[in-house]
Image (cartoon, rainbow, N blue to C red; front, side):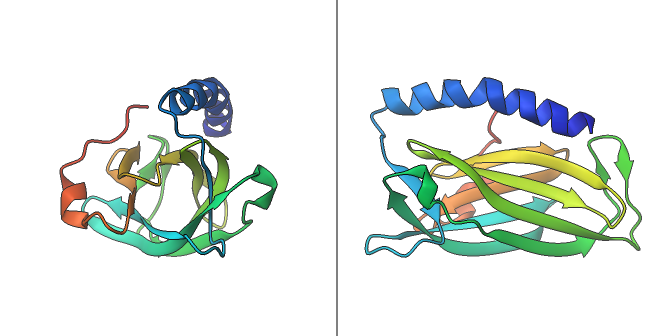
Amino acid sequence: MRTLRFLAVTFLLVVPVLSSEAQQRGSKQLWSWFGKCRNAQTMRIEVVQKDTILHRSSFPLCPISDRSKEADRRLAFFFKGGHVFDGEFRTKRSETIEGNIWEAGTDPGIIYFGVSFMTRKELLLNTIHIARPDRASVTEIDPGLVVRTLPVSISTSRLQGLKPNPK
C-alpha cells in the first residue's frame, strides 16, 4: 500500500513538470499504443532483471488528437520469483510472479506506462515508466529491475549503455 501512495504522490508531482518540459521542446503530439493508423511507428518494451529479459514485445504507436482514443490494453507476462520487491516483499523461487504493463496516460511527446508485479496473494510493486516515442528510455523501477523502451529503429546494443531515468 505504501508503494501505491508513493506512486500516486510522485505521479501528481512529476506529471505537470514533464508536461511543461515536453511543451517547451515543441513536441505537441499525443501518442497511443496498439492503434491502427497509416503513420504508425513501432516501439519495443523490455523488462530486464539482472541481464535476464523477463519480457520483450513490440507494438505500434499512433499519433492521436485526443486522450479518449487511448487503447485500453494490458500486456501480461509471468516469471519465477526469487526477487525482493520494494526492499520489503520477498518472493520464493517457487512462486510465479505476474507482470502487467498498460498505457497509464499520455502527454505531448510522452507515454506513461504502468508496470506492476504481483503474486496470487499480494501486489509487490506498482509504478510508472515514462517512454518517449522518438528515443530510448530506461527506468530502474527496483534494484536490478529495469524497464526500457525504444523505437525499433534504435538497436538494443545502444540501449545497454544508457543510464536509467532519474526518479
